[in-house]
Length: 319
Image 1 (cartoon, rainbow, N blue to C red):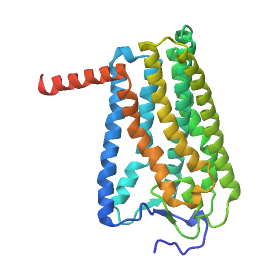
Image 2: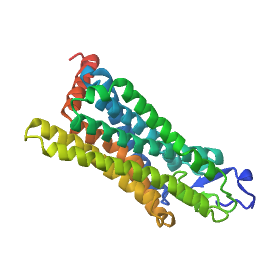
Image 3: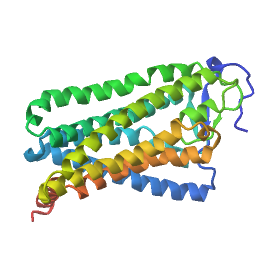
């Protein structure tokens, strides 16, 4: 049985068992292969974007610098949960230490918060570029861009300090089985010894505040952007602006939709199956789709990626 009979609090609670997907060993092997392929494709796709921006001088602009940083964030994001999930598919014990679980919770949700800040920052960049084009070079300088990027990273990790501290004080003394494939908020609170409504409310409030503030800013920014784009005469410039904004909005709605349902909706905590599905959606599907959405809908990015492929082919095969 995956139960610790010691009725002490977290100070004597040494490890958790991540239940995962509740399937046979054969299915777990298939899932291991499936998610391994997704993991590799995600790393390759986002790494390609970073390399394209790094090597192509024409892409050394704030928009693509933000996109490269966003791709790096996606790599960090998927590495915060998928490797441990893949390991657990092949493991019989599926255990994670108490401190490792708290650390995974903090890093995973900090990267989630950082992504919210990045999406808002990318919306700001598009707003200035389209609505204030003459002032764009003076507003979005490299220094300003670097400062905003740094602020997004620092802000994301600072935002989760209080929730992580509260979770570390939650008493776990009954079952040590977490009905999830990672240490997430709802799944951890579900195995608390006693109800912790203040902790749950505080964590939900932190999630709701950052989610709705950044989403409101993004929606206002893109409303102004689309209004400005509509006023532009039909032509290549208008199509390019629409294409860029559409790409951003696809990522925004996919990510925000799943995060909002996951951390703001009160009934999700009692539905482990829905928790796992939503977590996979915003932590695995979004990083995978990011390079497809941004590169396949962006002419400059496709040209840069073709240059990289041609250069690698010349180096490897000499043709």
